[in-house]
Image (cartoon, rainbow, N blue to C red; front, side, top):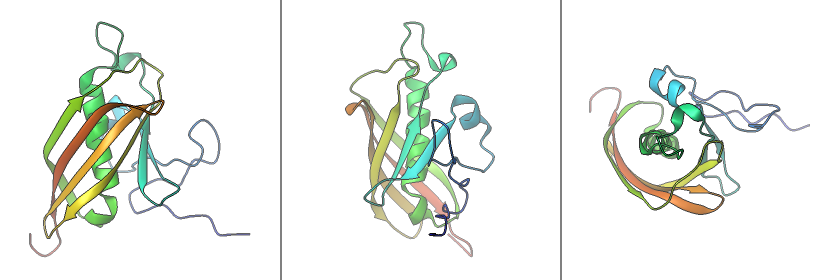
Amino acid sequence: MAAPVQPPAGLSAPFADGPWKGWSTWTGSEPFEEYAGPFYTREDQDGSRICGFRPRGVNLNGTGFVHGGAIATFADYSLFMIAHDAVKGETAVTVSLNTEFVGGARADSLLISRGNVLRSGKSLVFVRGVIEVENEPILNFSGVLRVFRAGGS
């Protein structure tokens, strides 16, 4: 029997059952993300990190669609998960988050984000990604994370 896959530092062990079977959550203290989410992440077939979010009623705007702020919060979470290996467990903050809405989502839709690290330097990590619902893009995003490496920067 193969040993269970250990999640990267800061992530819960993958859920063993239920609708998020195989997905993990961030285990650090993020009160706003915990309220706005929950958000999930897992390794995709190609080894990249993808994120998932199923919005609830509290995430909606007055027209019954998922509020843009909720989607942007999920994009910010996704920046960090996509850049997880580049950040290497160090403290990081969002320097910029750029978003272009190209669609919308309803409550209980499954939002999936994918992306990649464009460049990772000594203290800055550049990321881009897309959030989709049923394989249709609803948000393109890009951002920069500032990493506070131990011993300096």
